[in-house]
Length: 336
Ligand code: PEP
Ligand code: MN
Picture 1 (cartoon, rainbow, N blue to C red):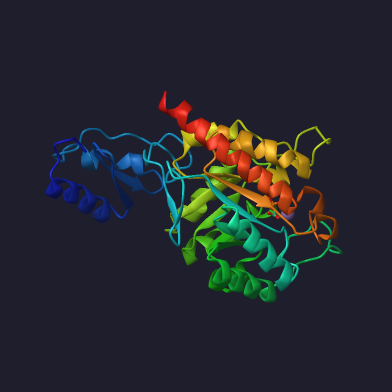
Picture 2: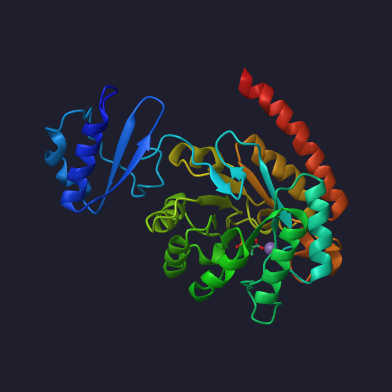
């Protein structure tokens, strides 16, 4: 809409969209209002709008992902997880905790520690998508209950993975953020279901997925009406086997150009090696990440999953100290 467009003019455009049977989303920016029109082949209807007063221009969204694109929404999305805000110019949010919820004691101990050091969310898998069927599969609902208890105790928001569409409602009852894992990024039934429940979603990048496939996966969730999607880069498969995966740092600034959605980085899965987690966490924040997902365990040697990439408490403290130092430098860089 043009700068001078009046409220009735905006409404008339919206009414026209509804009459045609297309969907819309209003985006009110600082200096202009954008009416996003959604539907297959929506651009073909442009003639139906061209004569309406107040319209400045009709722009096709050239990307295959629409709701996720910067063209559709120029301002950064800030996902509000019960008051903890991720995205835009908000402080970097650290989500920390064990790979798997193994028991009440270790979970509370970890939650207390990471909360005291500045983490805002507690991570922990209750349903684990393990590569081998013989590996620990998680505690299921009992694990979710422990996460909810840890939230009560510490005030941390809770993020946990949901593996199948049938468990989405159960998980949503206990957690604040539903994590969709790398192995499920293209599980479209799961994406639609997490879209329907409306809880914030942390969408991991498929380990062999392109950026476009990832953003189209986000589009599945967004198009169900759930706009609270955070992306999570967690490393991709390359020829290199010296590390578990290869952290794609390029994708952080790239995704921030292509999409308004917040970007979280998981240096734990990406490296597979605890000693690499702190430097890669710092690199991710320097590249523009809005949040970090980090595995922390009181005794990594005894962890039931991903011990080799889990930080112990001392290593976590060091990472947090360095992150604080790093953010003050970045503020100076940004101000220049
Ligand atoms: C995890 O966060 O523990 C996990 C299994 O993540 P991913 O889906 O990225 O492997
Ligand atoms: Mn893990």
